Amino acid sequence: LRFQLIKRSMDLLYASFGKAVELTRGKRGIDSNDADLEPKSSGLWVTVVAALAASYYNVIGPASKSAQVVTSSSTSVIQNTWGIVSLTAVKRASLEATRILKGAAIADRIDIFGVSCFILSRNPFPKLTTALRKIHRQESFANEVKLSTIHEQSLVHPRYNNGEVFDKKDIILHLSGGGFFAHTIASDLPYLLDWSAATNAVVIIPEYSLLPHHKFPDALVEVARLYKSLRFGYAATILGFQPDRIVVSGESVGGNLAFALCVGITMGDYGDSIFHDHLLSGRSDREDPVSDDEVETSDELIYHESFLAKANLPDALLVCCPVLNMTLDSTPSRILGANDPVLPSGLVRAISNSYLPNEGAVSKAHPLVSPYFAPDSVLSTFPPVLIFTSYEDPFLDDSVNFNARLKRAGVNSSLRAVHEMPHAFWALSTAGIPVSST
Image (cartoon, rainbow, N blue to C red; front, side):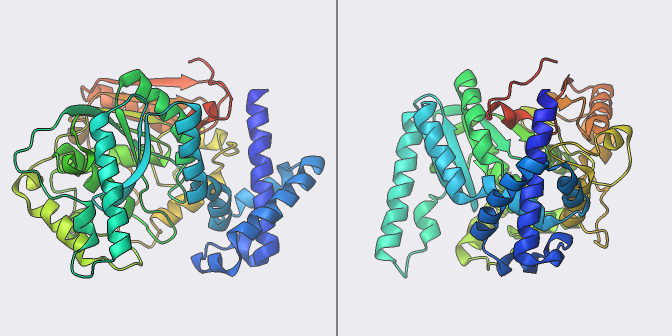
């Protein structure tokens, strides 16, 4: 019954937004993956039409229209459907709700070496609170006086400390899902705060770059830059504390990024010139120009002697329904899970082809794109791993096989599968849907 309830809710969502895209952009809008279609209609207008369509499909039933929408593999539908939780206003509202309703001592959003991040702590941490206040004062000062001779980046980001000793604190670096088209941060914040309370750790959630304008390896480059700024202590002057143990968690494509991060670190030269060149340049293929300040900051990170050394891996990995294999290979679980409520096969195809187009120079089987194909010599270096998945998840087979390979390679890896839950179910606890037992 629970699975059917989730299925109907997602069918209603896909049917409503699919119809809204069709009405506001024409039939071409729902059948096209053209990012240029985005400006042709207001996202707010699409949402309003979707709300009206939801009333209609709630009466006649959404299953037929939902199947038509997800089969089209339309990225426009993904952007509008999942993009709701990725809106800045929604994320900020969730942040404030988390602060008030769940009693977060710290719930803020700052920039760490060019990557916008949400920061959570259930318990008070005066050093971090003081550092955040200092950052916001500097930002306010820079905005007010608009100094033309002082770079804003230098005001907001202190340089490396001169022997200053910082308190140590554990960190959970959480990589949200959303199919590389959205961030599910708004729905992740409540359970992440519970994690913070249970571990007394600070949770950091990056807003990595998204499709359609940021393809592979942009998001991975940003995650790697953020992780290394934490691991090597460069972020201490920003956060007011020195990271101690770092656990990297991720759901869905966030799990892909978590494992790809470890693959890139273990390979030493980041596998090949594609990832290596992007990391050394300190920038991604984004449309907005890279400022001189960002180049300066990135160059300091890259060419500092300790940064060139092999990075330490995270202390542990915790993932849910990781998208380990970005190829479109058929597996039993992908066939059985073709109608998954959250991630049906049509959307899997759209995400895969958008993240790394078929005509790209890099294979989808490259270990940095699909960690599933990482060699055993790389897997053997991994830290302890805990994988959560569902028996109904389309990527179940990949998770089971990957866990088995990790175990054979000598890694302390465990897998836990739950019943009657769809892909990426962690956030469903936020919606009041209890997670079934393993």
